[in-house]
Length: 114
Image (cartoon, rainbow, N blue to C red; front, side, top):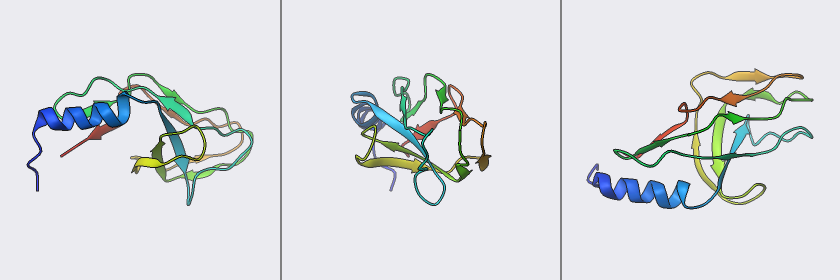
């Protein structure tokens, strides 16, 4: 069913992703657990046509340990713990080893309500 009007999609996106701080997390089979890892704040563009995209680069710290293959990207409502509010699969699975960094360039995280 695809009956939600664009104005309502934009309102939902604004309320859930822009009116509060959300944090990006990386996952392999579960969220990465490592001394050098932390969730990163995400900032989005204003909703347009039922979608938003990240308005700034999302840069994780340089790994000091092996984080494994990143197979999911998630958004949470807290820097640690909290509630998962979105998850998606990256276009490319990237292996993060020692001295590697995971970066999502501005405009590459697109969240769309259909």
